[in-house]
Image 1: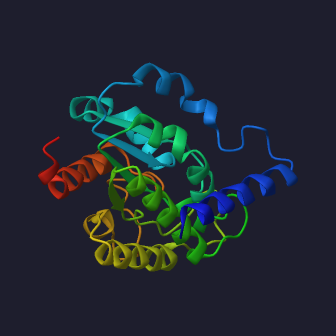
Image 2: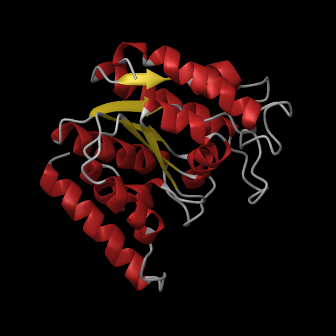
Amino acid sequence: MTAREIIIAIAGILIAAAASGQPRDWANFGRYSKQNDEIAGHKVNAVFMGNSITDNWARLDPEFFSSHGFVGRGISGQTTSEMLVRFRRDVLDLEPEAVAILAGINDIAQNNGYISLENTFGNIVSMCELAKAHRIKVIICSTLPCDRLSWRPEIKPAEQVKELNAMLKDYADRNRILFVDYWSVMANGNGGLDKEISGDGCHPNIDGYEIMEKTFLDATRRFKW
């Protein structure tokens, strides 16, 4: 996808949001506006782009982020379309050394309506391409195991999560991008999260985040955070 195609895709997302009557700040630019201004010009090792999983992570274990020069830019409930729209402000403008992208479960949950896995994958690829164009190292993280969605119980997400992760892993391998595989070290036999590390089978608790932290730091050892 060329830069022109990415711009056209983002414009289409914004037009669709306006037509649907969504609030003006559809992608929630305001959520991190103040924090972004405060750290402008400061060294950032990595931005963690994501949804509630990243949002809760930074809230439950802020020391993990601050001690490694990481900043969390997760927003609960967001899909990859919303993340792509705010990617410039919440990632590119911070000029980090790297970006870690963890996304996809809310697309599968159809938080903003149906979106195919191919288009979810395409949104993540677009974020990767934007980062690479700005000489920011890309880290693709697997979507976490999830076998039930408390807010959308009619959707059974486990197989779609596995399929999306396979697409992301293949893309990462073909493009020499680091892939952090949380799924393999956290999934139970149903493709979800055990109750010891999650209260709802989808969102980690602090014990789950400790597994993710070790997995992430082991996989990114070469970065010398």
